[in-house]
Length: 128
Image 1 (cartoon, rainbow, N blue to C red):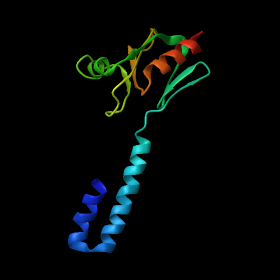
Image 2 (spheres, rainbow, N blue to C red):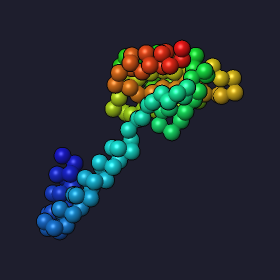
Image 3 (cartoon, rainbow, N blue to C red):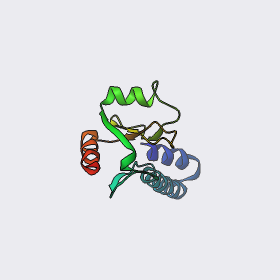
Image 4 (spheres, helix red, strand yellow):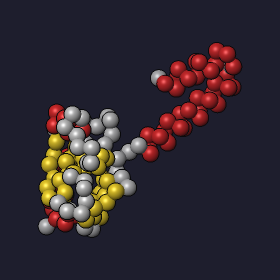
């Protein structure tokens, strides 16, 4: 709908060609932005990767799957300003990964996930 609005707002004063070009460029920009905004989470060997951040699994104290209510609360009013957030505003669930590194002031990582139980299970399995 946003692209239709852009097309109509450009078409009225400038015509079809300008509206088509600007709409195509806008669509491409929105698509690239959506790819760039994805949260990428992976376990690579003994490392947990969330976007550009990574941490050795030996520094993970616990991982907890969060339902929509818990996730919203921890990402909002109960958020710790020192926490690392790898979240998307459209995600409803996630995982809270508590850390035990004395040299790192970050108390926990909050990671968006469509299937938080699967991520917790993978972390638990990788730590063994």
